[in-house]
Length: 348
Image (cartoon, rainbow, N blue to C red; front, side, top):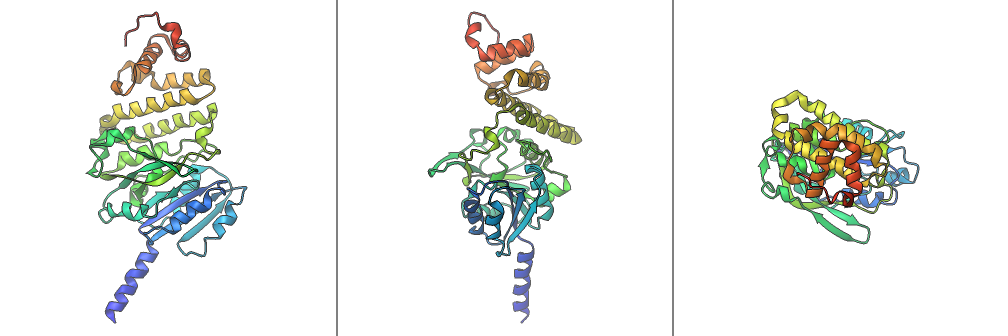
């Protein structure tokens, strides 16, 4: 009798306190939403909580989610549109799981994703468990994303501050799980900036910065869709591009609470920042306007050589030389018309 009561108590405890809470921010993704939610409801880890945040969708997303709420693992929050960051912050407030996962509503997860990731938490003692991921196209084409710089750290437990090369990888926050206490104790939230992009950037940096021990699994589970025409990746406007600058400002302000740790990662962080801003310059239409912000944000880094120079190619190094020596206007001219400068002898 006592044994039966104990089993009943354990079962109830696990139901009330799931191992992982998966947050699904939703905005007008009815085309892909069912595939996403089916991938979560069919996870081999049954002891999960699925928190769907409908961010004022104007398509059929609301109706699709309603087909799942009879499953007692689902929590549904319907709100007016306030942006990706605010949706995730709302979801975190409702989390009852030990760990938090994030799956965007146009992506989907392999069925063993969360069970496998949880196995490496050391029963709740690891701050973050992450993995690789797949780039996914709707014609069933997949490409596994692996990081060469992580080669020595795959499948090992380590402290990010002591191995700062991890700060160079893309945020890809949906490829891992995060200990709830890590976020709560360190006041880690998303920026609530309606209409913004890149809102995973400061979250990614903050979680690494405050983690004591993490695990990076050399496997892929999350299918990151490349064919959603509404994805912010395809938005090339100046206003969208500038949100990543705001994300970097946010992390720099946050990191000043621990300067000793910040100095350990500074060159890697600066390199990450430069690479991201250069990527923005390449894709944005209004390059003349954007380069002013780029110049202001990286000039001190370049002039002090406080970055990993070997992470950049010859063309990028010459571009940096122009930025430092002649300013953003001439540097942009070189960037757009490098053949004009072929006859100049430049020091790199």
